[in-house]
Length: 320
Image (tube, rainbow, N blue to C red; front, side, top):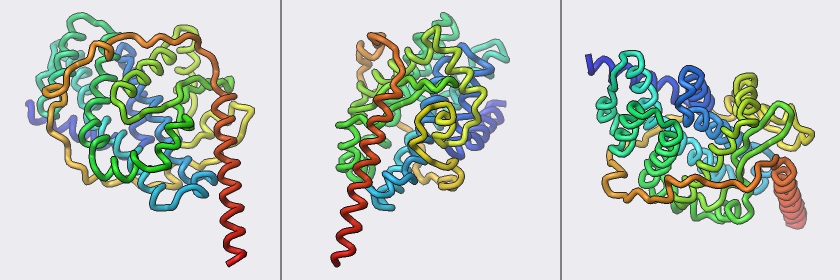
C-alpha cells in the first residue's frame, strides 16, 4: 500500500511541477480545499510573482540591459528555485490531505521524499495542536533553508547569477518586489533585497504573509487570486491599474517546460543548521499601504536607463 501512495504522490508532484503556471494553480487549488494551511496561499502568490519576473525578462528594459545568455540564466534561477521548493512542499501537502482523509497522521511517509526532520515534526505538531500560525512560519523557515545548499550556495548559480553586477544592482535599488494585487488596482507587498541571506528571506516571507492575511485585505487578495486567471503575465493585475507600463505576454509564449537535471538533494538541512529564535518571531509592519507609486517609479527609472543604454548602443553602431 505504501509504495502505491508514494508513487501516486510522486506522479502528482511531477504533473503539477511542469512550469510556473501549473505550480501557482496547484498551490491555490490546495488552499481552496484546506484553508487552514495558510502557506499554500502564500506560496501561490509568491509563485505568481516568480512568473511575472520570468516574463519581465522578455520585456524591453531587460532585453536592452541583459544579454540573451544572462536573461536565460536568470530565468533558470527563478525556475529552479520554485521547482525545487515545489518538489519538497507539494508531497507534504498531499500527505497532509491524505492524513485528513484517513483521520490519522501519515507524516512518516515524508521520509520517502527526503523532507527535513524539522518540518516532519512540525506537521505532527500541527496535527495535534492545530496552530496555523506556527505551521505557516515553519513552512517558510523550511522552504528557505532547503534551497540554501542546492541553489543559493551552488557554484554555477552563485558565481554566474548572485555575484553578477545585475543581481547586485537589483539588490541595491530594490527593483524586485513581491506584489499582492487587488481588483481595485491597489498593489501591496514588499520590496526584496539581501536575497542571499537566509534569515532575510525568512523575514521577507513572514512580512508578506502578514500582509496577505491582514484581516481587511485578505478577502481582496483571495478574490483576485480566484477571479484572475494565472498566466505568468503582469497583465493579470495591470488590467486594474492606472499604470500600463510593463507589457508582457503569457509565460507559455516565451518558455517551454524546463527539463530539470538537478537531482533531488537528499540532505536534511535541519541536521546541521541551528534553528534561530528570530526565525519564529513575528515581523512587525508599521503600516500596510499600497506600493503602486514606489513600484512604478522604480520601473520608470529602469525603463529610462534602458532607453539611454539603447541610444548609446545605437550611436556606437553608427560611428563604427
